[in-house]
Amino acid sequence: MANNIMNWIDKRFPATEFIKHSLTEYPTPKNLSYWWNFGSLAGIVLLLQLITGIFLAMHYKADVELSFNSIQHIMRDVNYGWLLRYMHATGASAFFFVIFTHMARTLYYGSYRAPRELLWWTGQGLLLLLMATAFMGYLLPWGQMSFWGATVITNLFKAIPFVGDSIVTLLRGDFTVGDPTLTRFFALHYLMPFVIVGAVLIHLVALHTVKSSNPTGLELPAKDNIPFHPYFTIKDLFGLGVFLIFYSVFVFFIPTSLMEAANNIPANPMVTPNHIVPEWYFLPFYAILRSVPSLVGGVVAMGLSVVIFAFLPFLDRSRIPGGARYRPVYKAQFYVFMTVTIVLGCVGYRPPTSAAIAIVGQIATVMYFGSFLLLPFISKMEERWLIKRGLPAIVMALINEEAAEIEKHKQKKNQRNGVKS
Amino acid sequence: MEQQNPSDVNRRSFLIKLTSVVGGAGVAAACVPLVSSMNPSSDVLAKATVEVDLSGIPVGGMHTIAWQGKPVFVLHRSPEEIAASASTNGVIDPEPDAKRAIKPEWLIVLGICTHMGCVPNKEGPGWVCHCHGSQYDDSGRVVHGPAPRNLEVPPYHFLSDTKLIIGKA
Image (cartoon, helix red, strand yellow):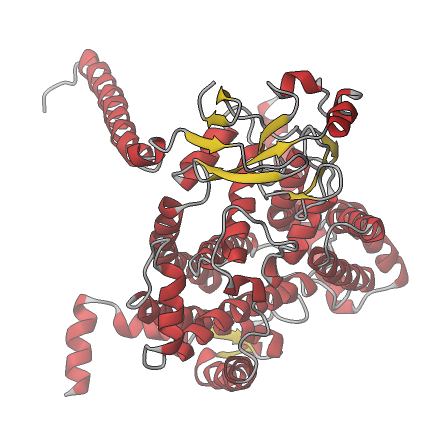
Protein backbone atom coordinates (compact mmCIF):
# COMPACT_ATOMS: atom_id res chain seq x y z
CA MET A 1 0.00 0.00 0.00
CA ALA A 2 2.70 2.48 1.08
CA ASN A 3 4.68 1.44 -2.00
CA ASN A 4 1.72 2.12 -4.23
CA ILE A 5 1.25 5.54 -2.77
CA MET A 6 4.95 6.34 -3.23
CA ASN A 7 4.77 5.13 -6.82
CA TRP A 8 1.74 7.31 -7.44
CA ILE A 9 3.56 10.33 -6.02
CA ASP A 10 6.87 9.61 -7.78
CA LYS A 11 5.13 9.63 -11.18
CA ARG A 12 4.03 13.20 -10.42
CA PHE A 13 6.73 14.55 -8.09
CA PRO A 14 10.32 13.27 -7.63
CA ALA A 15 9.95 12.55 -3.89
CA THR A 16 11.93 9.29 -3.64
CA GLU A 17 14.60 10.62 -5.97
CA PHE A 18 14.94 13.76 -3.85
CA ILE A 19 15.28 11.81 -0.59
CA LYS A 20 17.85 9.52 -2.19
CA HIS A 21 19.85 12.36 -3.70
CA SER A 22 19.99 14.56 -0.65
CA LEU A 23 19.75 12.11 2.26
CA THR A 24 19.96 8.33 1.98
CA GLU A 25 22.50 8.27 -0.84
CA TYR A 26 24.06 11.69 -0.43
CA PRO A 27 27.80 10.93 -0.36
CA THR A 28 29.55 12.44 2.66
CA PRO A 29 33.27 12.20 3.46
CA LYS A 30 33.82 9.60 6.16
CA ASN A 31 36.52 11.66 7.86
CA LEU A 32 34.35 14.65 8.87
CA SER A 33 35.05 15.82 12.41
CA TYR A 34 32.57 17.38 14.84
CA TRP A 35 33.45 20.79 13.37
CA TRP A 36 31.21 19.77 10.46
CA ASN A 37 28.17 19.60 12.76
CA PHE A 38 27.57 23.33 12.86
CA GLY A 39 25.91 23.67 9.46
CA SER A 40 22.94 21.46 10.27
CA LEU A 41 22.96 22.90 13.80
CA ALA A 42 22.47 26.38 12.31
CA GLY A 43 19.44 25.03 10.44
CA ILE A 44 17.94 23.73 13.67
CA VAL A 45 18.57 27.01 15.50
CA LEU A 46 16.87 28.84 12.63
CA LEU A 47 13.85 26.58 13.10
CA LEU A 48 13.90 27.24 16.86
CA GLN A 49 13.98 31.02 16.26
CA LEU A 50 11.15 30.79 13.72
CA ILE A 51 8.90 28.82 16.04
CA THR A 52 9.52 30.85 19.22
CA GLY A 53 9.34 34.07 17.19
CA ILE A 54 5.97 33.28 15.65
CA PHE A 55 4.48 32.54 19.09
CA LEU A 56 6.05 35.69 20.59
CA ALA A 57 4.53 37.75 17.77
CA MET A 58 1.08 36.62 18.92
CA HIS A 59 1.59 38.63 22.14
CA TYR A 60 3.94 41.42 21.12
CA LYS A 61 2.73 44.92 20.15
CA ALA A 62 4.82 47.04 17.81
CA ASP A 63 3.92 50.52 19.08
CA VAL A 64 6.15 52.87 21.07
CA GLU A 65 3.44 53.26 23.73
CA LEU A 66 2.84 49.52 24.09
CA SER A 67 5.91 47.54 23.09
CA PHE A 68 7.98 47.88 26.29
CA ASN A 69 4.98 46.87 28.39
CA SER A 70 4.02 44.05 26.05
CA ILE A 71 7.43 42.48 26.78
CA GLN A 72 6.63 42.68 30.52
CA HIS A 73 3.22 41.18 29.72
CA ILE A 74 4.91 38.31 27.89
CA MET A 75 7.33 37.77 30.79
CA ARG A 76 4.71 37.86 33.58
CA ASP A 77 1.26 37.02 32.24
CA VAL A 78 1.52 34.92 29.10
CA ASN A 79 1.71 31.17 29.82
CA TYR A 80 5.33 30.18 29.29
CA GLY A 81 5.92 33.64 27.81
CA TRP A 82 9.17 33.86 29.78
CA LEU A 83 10.31 30.61 28.20
CA LEU A 84 9.50 31.75 24.67
CA ARG A 85 11.29 35.05 25.18
CA TYR A 86 14.37 33.62 26.85
CA MET A 87 14.59 30.91 24.18
CA HIS A 88 14.33 33.52 21.45
CA ALA A 89 16.85 35.93 23.01
CA THR A 90 19.31 33.15 23.85
CA GLY A 91 18.63 31.64 20.44
CA ALA A 92 19.88 34.81 18.74
CA SER A 93 23.22 34.52 20.56
CA ALA A 94 23.31 30.77 19.90
CA PHE A 95 22.67 31.41 16.20
CA PHE A 96 25.69 33.71 15.95
CA PHE A 97 27.83 31.34 18.01
CA VAL A 98 26.96 28.47 15.67
CA ILE A 99 27.43 30.55 12.51
CA PHE A 100 30.77 31.98 13.68
CA THR A 101 32.00 28.47 14.49
CA HIS A 102 30.75 27.28 11.10
CA MET A 103 32.71 30.11 9.45
CA ALA A 104 35.82 29.50 11.55
CA ARG A 105 35.81 25.87 10.44
CA THR A 106 35.49 27.01 6.81
CA LEU A 107 38.50 29.30 7.29
CA TYR A 108 40.63 26.75 9.15
CA TYR A 109 40.16 23.96 6.62
CA GLY A 110 40.06 26.25 3.60
CA SER A 111 36.60 24.99 2.68
CA TYR A 112 35.86 28.25 0.82
CA ARG A 113 38.38 27.34 -1.90
CA ALA A 114 37.52 26.11 -5.41
CA PRO A 115 35.07 24.64 -6.24
CA ARG A 116 33.14 25.91 -3.19
CA GLU A 117 33.25 29.69 -3.86
CA LEU A 118 29.52 30.01 -4.53
CA LEU A 119 28.75 27.94 -1.43
CA TRP A 120 30.91 30.40 0.57
CA TRP A 121 29.27 33.45 -1.01
CA THR A 122 25.73 32.23 -0.41
CA GLY A 123 26.85 31.70 3.20
CA GLN A 124 28.11 35.29 3.24
CA GLY A 125 24.70 36.47 2.07
CA LEU A 126 23.12 34.45 4.87
CA LEU A 127 25.41 36.10 7.42
CA LEU A 128 24.34 39.56 6.23
CA LEU A 129 20.66 38.57 6.39
CA LEU A 130 21.17 37.15 9.87
CA MET A 131 22.87 40.34 11.05
CA ALA A 132 20.07 42.51 9.64
CA THR A 133 17.42 40.33 11.24
CA ALA A 134 19.15 40.32 14.63
CA PHE A 135 19.66 44.08 14.52
CA MET A 136 15.99 44.76 13.76
CA GLY A 137 14.81 42.29 16.37
CA TYR A 138 16.87 44.05 19.02
CA LEU A 139 14.84 47.25 18.61
CA LEU A 140 11.54 45.52 19.40
CA PRO A 141 11.75 45.49 23.26
CA TRP A 142 12.04 49.31 22.99
CA GLY A 143 14.52 49.66 25.86
CA GLN A 144 17.35 52.18 26.05
CA MET A 145 19.87 49.85 24.39
CA SER A 146 17.34 48.96 21.69
CA PHE A 147 16.68 52.60 20.93
CA TRP A 148 20.27 53.84 20.92
CA GLY A 149 21.57 50.79 19.08
CA ALA A 150 19.07 51.42 16.30
CA THR A 151 19.88 55.15 16.36
CA VAL A 152 23.61 54.57 15.92
CA ILE A 153 23.25 51.91 13.23
CA THR A 154 20.68 53.79 11.13
CA ASN A 155 22.98 56.82 11.44
CA LEU A 156 25.71 54.85 9.68
CA PHE A 157 23.87 55.50 6.42
CA LYS A 158 24.68 59.20 6.85
CA ALA A 159 28.09 58.28 5.49
CA ILE A 160 26.58 57.90 1.98
CA PRO A 161 27.51 61.05 0.04
CA PHE A 162 24.80 63.62 -0.87
CA VAL A 163 21.71 61.52 -0.07
CA GLY A 164 22.88 60.19 3.32
CA ASP A 165 20.59 62.31 5.48
CA SER A 166 17.51 61.62 3.35
CA ILE A 167 18.26 57.90 3.42
CA VAL A 168 18.46 57.93 7.22
CA THR A 169 15.06 59.66 7.36
CA LEU A 170 13.67 57.23 4.79
CA LEU A 171 14.84 54.24 6.83
CA ARG A 172 13.40 55.61 10.05
CA GLY A 173 10.21 57.16 8.66
CA ASP A 174 10.79 59.95 11.17
CA PHE A 175 13.46 62.48 12.11
CA THR A 176 14.54 60.17 14.92
CA VAL A 177 14.04 56.48 15.60
CA GLY A 178 10.33 56.50 16.44
CA ASP A 179 7.02 54.74 16.07
CA PRO A 180 7.27 54.30 12.28
CA THR A 181 10.74 52.80 12.76
CA LEU A 182 9.56 50.32 15.37
CA THR A 183 6.60 49.18 13.30
CA ARG A 184 8.60 48.66 10.11
CA PHE A 185 11.41 46.89 11.96
CA PHE A 186 8.83 44.48 13.35
CA ALA A 187 7.35 43.87 9.90
CA LEU A 188 10.82 43.21 8.45
CA HIS A 189 11.97 41.17 11.45
CA TYR A 190 9.00 38.88 10.79
CA LEU A 191 9.68 38.74 7.04
CA MET A 192 13.46 38.22 7.03
CA PRO A 193 13.54 34.72 8.55
CA PHE A 194 11.53 33.44 5.59
CA VAL A 195 13.96 35.12 3.21
CA ILE A 196 16.69 33.35 5.19
CA VAL A 197 14.92 30.01 4.72
CA GLY A 198 14.94 30.63 0.97
CA ALA A 199 18.63 31.56 1.05
CA VAL A 200 19.38 28.42 3.08
CA LEU A 201 17.78 26.31 0.34
CA ILE A 202 20.07 27.97 -2.23
CA HIS A 203 23.03 27.35 0.11
CA LEU A 204 22.02 23.66 0.29
CA VAL A 205 21.62 23.30 -3.49
CA ALA A 206 25.15 24.70 -3.85
CA LEU A 207 26.39 22.31 -1.13
CA HIS A 208 24.80 19.28 -2.74
CA THR A 209 26.41 20.18 -6.06
CA VAL A 210 29.99 20.52 -4.76
CA LYS A 211 29.51 18.22 -1.71
CA SER A 212 31.06 18.68 1.73
CA SER A 213 34.73 19.49 2.13
CA ASN A 214 36.75 17.48 4.65
CA PRO A 215 39.63 18.01 7.09
CA THR A 216 42.35 17.02 4.59
CA GLY A 217 41.26 19.61 2.05
CA LEU A 218 41.68 16.97 -0.69
CA GLU A 219 38.81 15.73 -2.83
CA LEU A 220 38.18 12.16 -1.68
CA PRO A 221 37.66 9.21 -4.05
CA ALA A 222 34.12 7.73 -4.06
CA LYS A 223 35.15 4.82 -1.80
CA ASP A 224 35.88 7.24 1.04
CA ASN A 225 32.34 8.64 1.07
CA ILE A 226 29.51 7.22 3.15
CA PRO A 227 25.76 7.96 2.91
CA PHE A 228 24.54 10.95 4.91
CA HIS A 229 21.74 8.86 6.38
CA PRO A 230 22.12 7.14 8.82
CA TYR A 231 25.78 7.99 9.57
CA PHE A 232 25.56 11.76 9.74
CA THR A 233 21.93 12.12 10.72
CA ILE A 234 22.84 10.27 13.91
CA LYS A 235 26.06 12.25 14.38
CA ASP A 236 24.22 15.56 13.87
CA LEU A 237 21.55 14.44 16.35
CA PHE A 238 24.21 13.68 18.93
CA GLY A 239 25.77 17.11 18.33
CA LEU A 240 22.33 18.67 18.69
CA GLY A 241 21.97 16.98 22.10
CA VAL A 242 25.26 18.47 23.30
CA PHE A 243 24.28 21.88 21.94
CA LEU A 244 20.88 21.75 23.66
CA ILE A 245 22.55 21.08 27.03
CA PHE A 246 24.52 24.35 26.80
CA TYR A 247 21.54 26.18 25.31
CA SER A 248 19.32 25.03 28.18
CA VAL A 249 21.88 26.14 30.78
CA PHE A 250 21.60 29.64 29.34
CA VAL A 251 17.82 29.58 28.92
CA PHE A 252 16.99 28.19 32.37
CA PHE A 253 19.84 29.31 34.64
CA ILE A 254 21.51 32.43 33.25
CA PRO A 255 19.00 33.86 30.75
CA THR A 256 19.97 37.49 31.40
CA SER A 257 23.73 36.93 31.24
CA LEU A 258 23.87 38.11 27.63
CA MET A 259 21.37 40.95 28.07
CA GLU A 260 22.26 44.55 28.92
CA ALA A 261 20.66 45.82 32.13
CA ALA A 262 20.10 49.24 30.53
CA ASN A 263 17.56 47.65 28.19
CA ASN A 264 15.20 47.32 31.16
CA ILE A 265 14.76 51.11 31.03
CA PRO A 266 12.15 52.21 28.47
CA ALA A 267 13.59 54.02 25.44
CA ASN A 268 14.21 57.72 26.06
CA PRO A 269 15.14 59.81 23.00
CA MET A 270 16.37 62.64 25.27
CA VAL A 271 19.06 60.72 27.20
CA THR A 272 21.77 58.41 25.88
CA PRO A 273 23.07 55.85 28.40
CA ASN A 274 26.68 56.56 29.37
CA HIS A 275 27.92 53.33 27.91
CA ILE A 276 26.15 51.86 24.91
CA VAL A 277 27.36 48.53 23.60
CA PRO A 278 25.97 46.30 20.88
CA GLU A 279 25.22 42.63 21.46
CA TRP A 280 28.39 40.54 21.82
CA TYR A 281 28.21 39.19 18.27
CA PHE A 282 28.62 42.68 16.80
CA LEU A 283 31.45 43.78 19.13
CA PRO A 284 34.46 43.12 16.81
CA PHE A 285 32.83 45.04 13.97
CA TYR A 286 31.81 47.82 16.35
CA ALA A 287 35.42 48.09 17.56
CA ILE A 288 36.57 48.53 13.95
CA LEU A 289 33.95 51.27 13.44
CA ARG A 290 35.29 53.13 16.47
CA SER A 291 38.95 52.58 15.66
CA VAL A 292 38.89 54.64 12.47
CA PRO A 293 38.97 58.32 13.46
CA SER A 294 36.54 59.50 10.77
CA LEU A 295 32.84 58.92 10.25
CA VAL A 296 32.95 57.75 6.62
CA GLY A 297 36.19 55.82 7.12
CA GLY A 298 34.77 53.99 10.11
CA VAL A 299 31.60 53.02 8.29
CA VAL A 300 33.51 51.82 5.22
CA ALA A 301 35.96 49.84 7.38
CA MET A 302 33.14 48.21 9.31
CA GLY A 303 31.28 47.28 6.13
CA LEU A 304 34.48 45.92 4.62
CA SER A 305 35.29 43.89 7.73
CA VAL A 306 32.16 41.81 7.10
CA VAL A 307 32.26 41.66 3.30
CA ILE A 308 36.00 41.00 2.96
CA PHE A 309 35.45 37.30 3.73
CA ALA A 310 33.89 36.98 0.28
CA PHE A 311 37.25 37.76 -1.37
CA LEU A 312 39.05 34.87 0.35
CA PRO A 313 38.82 32.47 -2.63
CA PHE A 314 40.82 35.02 -4.64
CA LEU A 315 43.19 36.04 -1.85
CA ASP A 316 44.36 32.51 -1.07
CA ARG A 317 46.73 31.79 -3.97
CA SER A 318 48.44 28.67 -2.68
CA ARG A 319 48.43 25.64 -4.98
CA ILE A 320 48.53 23.38 -1.93
CA PRO A 321 44.94 22.18 -1.48
CA GLY A 322 42.80 22.91 1.56
CA GLY A 323 43.61 24.86 4.68
CA ALA A 324 45.54 24.18 7.86
CA ARG A 325 46.08 20.42 7.31
CA TYR A 326 49.12 20.75 5.03
CA ARG A 327 49.90 24.44 5.58
CA PRO A 328 51.52 25.38 8.93
CA VAL A 329 51.83 29.09 8.06
CA TYR A 330 48.17 29.29 7.10
CA LYS A 331 47.34 27.57 10.38
CA ALA A 332 49.35 30.15 12.33
CA GLN A 333 47.63 32.92 10.38
CA PHE A 334 44.26 31.45 11.32
CA TYR A 335 45.07 31.54 15.03
CA VAL A 336 46.42 35.10 14.78
CA PHE A 337 43.21 36.15 13.06
CA MET A 338 41.03 34.49 15.72
CA THR A 339 43.04 36.17 18.49
CA VAL A 340 42.79 39.58 16.79
CA THR A 341 39.02 39.15 16.41
CA ILE A 342 38.63 38.31 20.10
CA VAL A 343 40.81 41.30 21.08
CA LEU A 344 38.61 43.51 18.89
CA GLY A 345 35.57 42.09 20.66
CA CYS A 346 37.02 43.05 24.06
CA VAL A 347 37.94 46.53 22.77
CA GLY A 348 34.41 46.98 21.45
CA TYR A 349 32.99 46.22 24.86
CA ARG A 350 35.08 48.88 26.68
CA PRO A 351 34.06 52.55 26.84
CA PRO A 352 35.85 54.59 24.17
CA THR A 353 37.42 57.08 26.58
CA SER A 354 40.73 55.32 27.26
CA ALA A 355 43.55 56.20 24.84
CA ALA A 356 45.40 52.91 25.47
CA ILE A 357 42.34 50.84 24.54
CA ALA A 358 41.88 52.96 21.42
CA ILE A 359 45.46 52.20 20.29
CA VAL A 360 45.00 48.47 20.94
CA GLY A 361 41.83 48.70 18.83
CA GLN A 362 43.67 50.43 15.99
CA ILE A 363 46.51 47.90 15.99
CA ALA A 364 43.99 45.04 16.03
CA THR A 365 42.05 46.66 13.17
CA VAL A 366 45.19 46.88 11.05
CA MET A 367 46.01 43.24 11.85
CA TYR A 368 42.43 42.19 11.03
CA PHE A 369 42.64 43.62 7.54
CA GLY A 370 46.29 42.60 7.23
CA SER A 371 45.27 38.96 7.70
CA PHE A 372 43.29 39.23 4.48
CA LEU A 373 45.41 41.60 2.41
CA LEU A 374 48.73 39.82 3.07
CA LEU A 375 47.26 36.39 2.38
CA PRO A 376 48.09 36.42 -1.38
CA PHE A 377 51.79 36.97 -0.64
CA ILE A 378 52.02 34.80 2.45
CA SER A 379 50.22 31.90 0.76
CA LYS A 380 52.55 32.09 -2.26
CA MET A 381 55.67 32.25 -0.07
CA GLU A 382 54.43 29.40 2.08
CA GLU A 383 53.79 27.33 -1.04
CA ARG A 384 57.37 27.78 -2.32
CA TRP A 385 58.81 26.99 1.12
CA LEU A 386 56.68 23.87 1.58
CA ILE A 387 57.43 22.48 -1.88
CA LYS A 388 61.16 22.95 -1.20
CA ARG A 389 60.81 21.32 2.23
CA GLY A 390 58.82 18.41 0.78
CA LEU A 391 55.13 17.61 0.92
CA PRO A 392 53.32 14.25 1.27
CA ALA A 393 53.32 12.38 -2.03
CA ILE A 394 49.54 12.63 -2.43
CA VAL A 395 49.62 16.42 -2.19
CA MET A 396 52.59 16.73 -4.56
CA ALA A 397 50.83 14.46 -7.03
CA LEU A 398 47.79 16.74 -6.97
CA ILE A 399 49.89 19.86 -7.50
CA ASN A 400 51.77 18.27 -10.40
CA GLU A 401 48.52 17.01 -11.89
CA GLU A 402 47.11 20.52 -11.76
CA ALA A 403 50.26 21.97 -13.28
CA ALA A 404 50.11 19.40 -16.10
CA GLU A 405 46.47 20.30 -16.68
CA ILE A 406 47.33 23.99 -17.01
CA GLU A 407 50.25 23.16 -19.30
CA LYS A 408 47.93 21.09 -21.53
CA HIS A 409 45.48 23.99 -21.76
CA LYS A 410 48.30 26.33 -22.72
CA GLN A 411 49.53 23.99 -25.46
CA LYS A 412 46.03 23.61 -26.88
CA LYS A 413 45.64 27.34 -26.91
CA ASN A 414 49.00 27.79 -28.63
CA GLN A 415 48.09 25.16 -31.21
CA ARG A 416 44.79 26.90 -31.96
CA ASN A 417 46.54 30.22 -32.28
CA GLY A 418 49.19 28.62 -34.49
CA VAL A 419 46.54 27.24 -36.89
CA LYS A 420 44.94 30.65 -37.10
CA SER A 421 48.12 32.49 -37.97
CA MET B 1 6.58 28.49 -45.09
CA GLU B 2 6.40 32.17 -45.76
CA GLN B 3 9.68 33.94 -46.24
CA GLN B 4 10.72 36.15 -43.39
CA ASN B 5 10.93 39.75 -44.31
CA PRO B 6 14.11 41.27 -42.81
CA SER B 7 12.16 44.36 -41.79
CA ASP B 8 9.86 42.07 -39.75
CA VAL B 9 12.86 40.90 -37.71
CA ASN B 10 13.94 44.46 -37.12
CA ARG B 11 10.42 45.45 -36.19
CA ARG B 12 10.13 42.52 -33.76
CA SER B 13 13.42 43.29 -32.00
CA PHE B 14 12.47 46.96 -31.82
CA LEU B 15 9.10 46.04 -30.28
CA ILE B 16 10.79 43.75 -27.72
CA LYS B 17 13.14 46.56 -26.68
CA LEU B 18 10.32 49.09 -26.54
CA THR B 19 7.99 46.91 -24.46
CA SER B 20 10.87 46.00 -22.12
CA VAL B 21 11.62 49.67 -21.50
CA VAL B 22 7.93 50.51 -20.97
CA GLY B 23 7.54 47.51 -18.66
CA GLY B 24 10.65 48.50 -16.71
CA ALA B 25 9.43 52.07 -16.38
CA GLY B 26 6.09 50.74 -15.14
CA VAL B 27 7.76 48.63 -12.46
CA ALA B 28 9.90 51.60 -11.39
CA ALA B 29 6.80 53.83 -11.23
CA ALA B 30 5.00 51.22 -9.13
CA CYS B 31 7.89 51.30 -6.64
CA VAL B 32 7.53 55.05 -6.05
CA PRO B 33 4.52 54.85 -3.71
CA LEU B 34 6.11 51.93 -1.84
CA VAL B 35 9.35 53.77 -1.14
CA SER B 36 7.53 57.05 -0.54
CA SER B 37 5.33 55.40 2.10
CA MET B 38 8.47 54.80 4.13
CA ASN B 39 9.27 58.54 4.35
CA PRO B 40 7.88 60.64 7.26
CA SER B 41 4.08 60.82 7.16
CA SER B 42 2.07 64.05 7.42
CA ASP B 43 1.54 63.79 11.17
CA VAL B 44 5.27 63.34 11.70
CA LEU B 45 5.97 66.39 9.53
CA ALA B 46 3.39 68.38 11.52
CA LYS B 47 5.52 68.36 14.69
CA ALA B 48 7.29 71.41 13.27
CA THR B 49 7.72 74.05 16.01
CA VAL B 50 7.91 74.18 19.80
CA GLU B 51 7.70 77.16 22.19
CA VAL B 52 10.18 77.41 25.09
CA ASP B 53 9.81 79.47 28.27
CA LEU B 54 13.28 80.76 29.19
CA SER B 55 12.43 82.37 32.53
CA GLY B 56 13.09 79.18 34.48
CA ILE B 57 16.64 78.58 33.22
CA PRO B 58 19.29 80.09 35.58
CA VAL B 59 22.63 81.42 34.34
CA GLY B 60 24.86 78.40 33.66
CA GLY B 61 21.81 76.13 33.52
CA MET B 62 20.67 73.99 30.60
CA HIS B 63 17.28 72.62 29.58
CA THR B 64 16.69 69.85 27.07
CA ILE B 65 13.64 70.46 24.88
CA ALA B 66 12.02 67.89 22.56
CA TRP B 67 11.61 69.28 19.04
CA GLN B 68 10.44 66.92 16.29
CA GLY B 69 11.28 64.15 18.74
CA LYS B 70 14.90 65.35 18.83
CA PRO B 71 16.58 66.82 21.93
CA VAL B 72 17.48 70.52 21.73
CA PHE B 73 19.91 71.96 24.31
CA VAL B 74 19.00 75.44 25.55
CA LEU B 75 22.06 76.71 27.47
CA HIS B 76 22.02 79.94 29.48
CA ARG B 77 25.67 80.97 29.22
CA SER B 78 27.52 83.00 31.82
CA PRO B 79 29.74 85.98 30.75
CA GLU B 80 32.83 83.80 31.28
CA GLU B 81 31.44 81.05 29.06
CA ILE B 82 30.57 83.61 26.40
CA ALA B 83 34.07 85.07 26.55
CA ALA B 84 35.66 81.60 26.36
CA SER B 85 33.49 80.67 23.37
CA ALA B 86 34.18 83.94 21.56
CA SER B 87 37.95 83.65 22.06
CA THR B 88 38.28 80.71 19.63
CA ASN B 89 36.76 79.56 16.37
CA GLY B 90 36.98 75.85 17.12
CA VAL B 91 39.41 73.37 15.57
CA ILE B 92 37.73 70.63 13.56
CA ASP B 93 34.87 72.63 12.05
CA PRO B 94 35.85 76.31 12.58
CA GLU B 95 32.95 78.72 13.03
CA PRO B 96 32.80 81.99 15.04
CA ASP B 97 30.61 81.88 18.14
CA ALA B 98 28.72 84.99 17.03
CA LYS B 99 27.37 83.03 14.05
CA ARG B 100 26.07 80.24 16.29
CA ALA B 101 24.01 82.28 18.76
CA ILE B 102 21.52 85.09 18.06
CA LYS B 103 21.85 86.33 21.64
CA PRO B 104 25.24 85.40 23.12
CA GLU B 105 23.76 84.43 26.51
CA TRP B 106 21.51 81.79 24.89
CA LEU B 107 23.05 78.90 22.99
CA ILE B 108 20.48 76.72 21.21
CA VAL B 109 21.84 73.55 19.54
CA LEU B 110 20.52 70.14 18.54
CA GLY B 111 21.58 67.63 21.19
CA ILE B 112 22.52 65.06 18.59
CA CYS B 113 26.15 64.08 18.15
CA THR B 114 27.09 64.60 14.50
CA HIS B 115 28.96 61.31 14.56
CA MET B 116 26.41 58.57 15.27
CA GLY B 117 23.48 60.49 16.68
CA CYS B 118 23.84 59.88 20.43
CA VAL B 119 22.86 62.59 22.92
CA PRO B 120 26.03 64.17 24.41
CA ASN B 121 26.14 64.83 28.18
CA LYS B 122 26.82 68.27 29.69
CA GLU B 123 30.15 67.75 31.38
CA GLY B 124 32.53 70.50 32.53
CA PRO B 125 32.73 73.13 29.83
CA GLY B 126 30.77 71.82 26.87
CA TRP B 127 29.50 68.33 26.14
CA VAL B 128 30.95 64.82 25.95
CA CYS B 129 29.37 62.09 23.83
CA HIS B 130 29.79 58.80 25.65
CA CYS B 131 29.08 56.63 22.63
CA HIS B 132 32.33 57.25 20.82
CA GLY B 133 34.10 59.94 22.85
CA SER B 134 33.42 63.15 20.84
CA GLN B 135 33.75 66.43 22.78
CA TYR B 136 32.09 69.79 22.19
CA ASP B 137 32.76 73.25 23.70
CA ASP B 138 30.22 75.70 25.16
CA SER B 139 29.40 76.88 21.64
CA GLY B 140 28.54 73.30 20.59
CA ARG B 141 31.65 73.17 18.40
CA VAL B 142 33.46 69.87 18.14
CA VAL B 143 36.89 70.00 19.82
CA HIS B 144 37.65 66.28 19.74
CA GLY B 145 36.58 63.66 17.16
CA PRO B 146 35.32 61.33 15.86
CA ALA B 147 32.42 63.77 15.28
CA PRO B 148 33.04 65.53 11.94
CA ARG B 149 30.86 68.64 12.44
CA ASN B 150 29.68 71.05 15.14
CA LEU B 151 26.35 70.48 16.89
CA GLU B 152 23.68 71.75 14.52
CA VAL B 153 21.92 75.05 15.31
CA PRO B 154 18.19 74.60 14.61
CA PRO B 155 16.15 77.47 13.13
CA TYR B 156 14.77 79.60 16.02
CA HIS B 157 13.76 83.11 16.99
CA PHE B 158 12.89 85.02 20.15
CA LEU B 159 9.26 86.10 20.72
CA SER B 160 10.27 88.13 23.76
CA ASP B 161 13.12 88.12 26.29
CA THR B 162 11.75 84.96 27.89
CA LYS B 163 10.01 83.23 24.96
CA LEU B 164 11.68 81.22 22.23
CA ILE B 165 10.27 79.45 19.16
CA ILE B 166 12.29 76.51 17.84
CA GLY B 167 11.60 75.28 14.32
CA LYS B 168 11.18 78.63 12.55
CA ALA B 169 13.82 81.29 11.98
